[in-house]
Amino acid sequence: MTIYHGTYCEIIFPKIIEGKYTKDFGTGFYCTVLKAQAERWAKRYDTPTVCTYQYEPVLSLRILEFKEMTEEWLDFIVSCRKGEKHNYDIVIGAMADDQIYNYIADFINGVITRKQFWALAEFKHPTHQINFCTDKAVECLTFIKSEEVAK
Image (cartoon, rainbow, N blue to C red; front, side, top):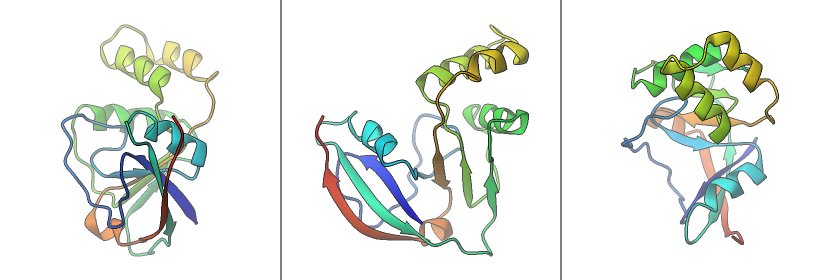
């Protein structure tokens, strides 16, 4: 499977880097099957770059996949955004984009209820992300190329 990573430079050998912000599926190396989404990620930087990889899954890895936005998906993201760790090598599912992120923050802070969250979230466009959470998971990636994209 071909996947993409939006960044500011070529990354031939991806690494897991502990960030200062909590993300949807925890610490890891985030990619997507949607090239346009990777381009949007890259455009946050001065030298927007999209790296392309071949992803070959390994059956021995612990993989969690959310096929759609469900209660389990929401609870998992809330847990990760609170900084709680999980035991998966790879997590796949919808991304909480900027708008969904705001709804999740409101839900965590008690501003909206779970029911209100789902009413707001159901009208958003689909997104996709694959988080490679461990060094073992990153080994499933083979660098193909990188290209700078127009801002």
